[in-house]
Image 1 (cartoon, rainbow, N blue to C red):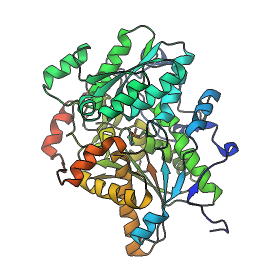
Image 2: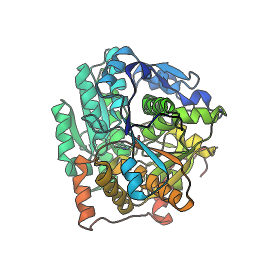
Image 3: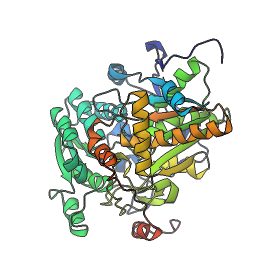
Image 4: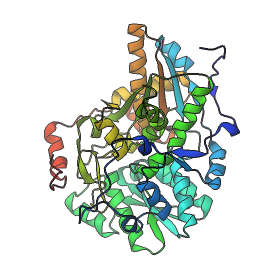
Amino acid sequence: MPNKEIPYKIYLEENEMPKQWYNVRADMKNKPAPLLNPETLKPMTFEELRHVFCDELVKQELNDTDAYIDIPEEILKFYKMYRPSPLVRAYCLEEKLQTPAKIYYKFEGNNTSGSHKLNSAIAQAYYAKQQGLKGVTTETGAGQWGTALSMACSYFGLDCQVYMVKVSYEQKPFRREVMRTYGAKVTPSPSETPEVGRKILQEHPGTSGSLGCAISEAVEAAQAQDGYRYVLGSVLSQVLLHQTIIGLETKAALDKYDIVPDIIIGCAGGGSNLGGLISPFMGEVLRGEKNYRFIAVEPSSCPSLTRGKYVYDFCDTGKVCPLAKMYTLGSGFIPSANHAGGLRYHGMSSILSQLYHDGYMESRSVEQTAVFQAAEEFARVEGILPAPESSHAIRVAIDEALKCKETGEEKTIVFGLTGTGYFDMVAYEKFHNGQMEDYIPSDEDLKPGFAGIPRFPGNEI
Ligand SMILES: *Cc1c(COP(=O)(O)O)cnc(C)c1O
């Protein structure tokens, strides 16, 4: 290492801040497969997609050639309120673990919504406003996305309607009330209002809901109202694009001190934070400039990458969204009520799926008690109370650091700390009381989800 001492927190100066998002698809030889229209099985066109999403976002969704896309001035201005997020050297954690590894984390919990989701929410609200829309509808799992979107919408004066996974709506009244503070209308999903919600309730009576199911309801609600579009907090390529602000800042901060990571780790729900964090580094690998290990971490109870199939599937339980080629457990898979709500999604970003399929990324699944052990260990030494989702990445970062302790290797580990867990204290309580259970679905349990995957020539399981 050169003579520069590495500070506890690495910030960027204003003139070092990224002004463009990076579109990793431009550097991928094997592009992610296009979204398909479920009726014609042909790639979704701009015209078809613009009925669902804002025009500018559709362009971003379909763009797999431009490596850099300008971040509009107004979004840069909003980013300045809470960015750059700090890249922290986890000196205390290293000491506690007695590891020769160097551990860094990029902390995205420094805003009221408590997670990275605001990075894309503000972009999506901006484009909706630009287009002169009245409002947007969306789904939210644990509530982080809904919170981020309600903040973004109130900033631009847009109406915001949120379908919230029922189990979270009931277990997390605080997040729900933050959304309402920002003026959003929040409905538990599945609900009785739209058609698709009622249908899901008939097929799965008493269900505690799922992200996929809430998506269907939100899409339907957008289509039923004039001047409304649906916006999504993860999975889509446009969302991953906005989240590259995380990776671009991380890379700029590391470069500033000539730090080269060996391993980059992130939790994976729909893949947006992980994709955003690793994109600039992945770009270097794809262009043959560098080599890094990337690890996606998911819950054992919802193992899309580790045990899913790489096929075209519906993005949502109600089958109203286009088909995406991705690692999936089947859109009908409703995971057990584990405590990392943001990771309870049956599929995965098509970009990450393709990269994983091509061997550029590894995946790990971890059990929730081990995740909360890591969360607690981290909270005690680093001072931040992490979100359960983020703690999946902490678990694997600690595991990798402990391996370094055995081998004596001084690896540099970077992980994404996506948010804080203050609204997840019921989960922490269960953990402290020894009432938290690990649930690993058997192959038998996964079968019904796989059986619901659409079959057509070229899409065999
Ligand atoms: C939503 C969420 C995630 C998972 O979403 P991705 O799209 O996979 O990034 C992870 N951590 C937190 C704190 C979240 O809110």
